[in-house]
Structure formats: structure tokens, C-alpha cells
Amino acid sequence: MSFVGPRPLPVSDLPAEPADTQFAVWLERRHAVAPGITGLWQVSGRASLPFEEMAAARPHLPGELVAGMDLRILWRTLPVILSRRGAY
Image (cartoon, rainbow, N blue to C red; front, side):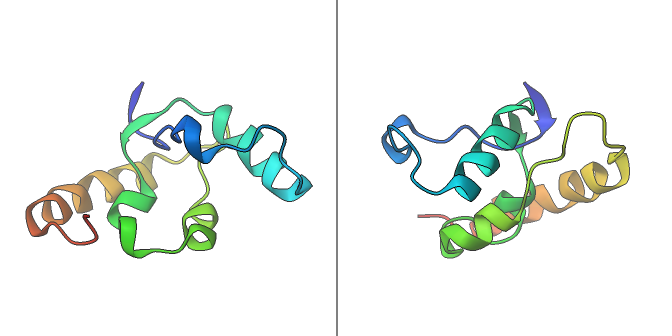
């Protein structure tokens, strides 16, 4: 687990066999990255975003240099938590 990365999806949200190949590729890329405590989706609206926008907040691919993006996400995390924006 890392500080910044995609949150694991609940098993109940996963189809037994994805019918959409684009979704299957997205899911495979998501599982190739270590999960994190916070991520782009969490600081971009969380539950108020539709699934398509959550999927567009793609996880970083292994090997990508994204330290600047990770720092921006970490910087935005505390205000989002304190404001409870997008929380259920």
C-alpha cells in the first residue's frame, strides 16, 4: 500500500466476467498499481462523481514518474477530508 493510489473496489462492484473489454483493460491497469490511502478520485469529488468520471481519474501506470501529481493529491487531501465534500 502507498499513500497515493487507487482505492480497492468492493468485490460487490466487480462483475464476474467484464462484458466490456474497455472496462476489463481499465480494471487490469487499476490492479497493476499499489492501492493507496488517497487518490485523484478522492480529491476530485468522491461519491458525487459518476462512475465514468471516477474511471477517467486513471491510476498511474507502474514506472510512470508522477511525484509532482502525487504531491498535489496529498496537498489537496486534508482540505477535502475536513470539508467532507463528496462524502456519503
